[in-house]
Image (cartoon, rainbow, N blue to C red; front, side, top):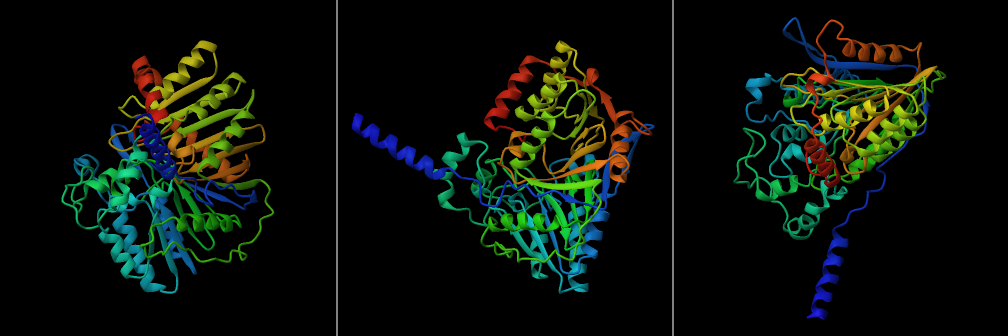
Length: 474
């Protein structure tokens, strides 16, 4: 019996090792540093003013501008590109069908400039993890758009307690497309799904990148072109620089791990970016990161903060234990810290993370201030961090929520780092944005911490358990 147990144990270990996934080549990328003549900052804001909801929209017009001006190619690597809606969202949010609008503009571009290649790299959630063909996407493919869905099984598992048995006992049976018999448990009005697509979704990882580019211009954003997020508050950074060559190269790596049946055929052709002029402006410098390299660089910059420095964080999710500890250490060294978080009704992760930081600050009399964004049915979906030094400001922006899943090489993510002196427009615009929200200038943007906190020990324990084990949407 002991020998039999030994055999079974070794078989299990062998199968477990087979189920493990290493990070695919070309991911977790860090570029060189480049000068830039300018970086444009855009944002979408939903807020209350005099009791009425106000909307300011800037981002998608810039995305359409990049599409319109494409002469050689247009590439969008984005998490969500659909207008699926959850139950009750249409009535509560009155969403805009941004995916439909964007798709129509892509079709117009194909008719107008058929020689311009258009590539889309998307997340599997747009087909509910392989359950059905996305009708909008099929229409684009029929017009010559090349689409690839990242194969999430090729990414590392944030929740191995679930993903290991899934890889061993469910994945080998495949996932037949367009044969679902179950109502979509998340969205209304879609085609039916399969049990295996639901089980695939539970691996809880994503191609979460948010990049829009052509041969001359790139834009990184926190926004997705989808109806359910159409009223979210988001930010975007648009620029032209030789750094586009490295950004495109990192997209070639992402294309290689898309599903083999996609029209993209797991391939982006090489492109020449040598026509983009090299900037002599040393007052703006750019660096590009994907996946875990973002967290590594943020941690490095936070570790260099001291008295006189100020850290401003604006985030949809704050949960990563390493980043939270970095914030605490920065406060201990004397840095001033301001944080704006999405005001989720759920206690985790933001209320728990905020409580952890504020209790630490009160105990040691450190300078940490936190406010919650005054959201309605929409979300404060921003992912930003800035460090204000004596002579310059460092800003990170892109797709990366401050969570273990987003920062520790599980999801696909991308981030731009901008180092700019205070006399540059990008610095002024970023600081004006923060100030407007923090001081509630011309609107009711942020709410005081004390009125919306949740410092219950049970909330903190739940947060720690979920973050360590990968449970939850963060």
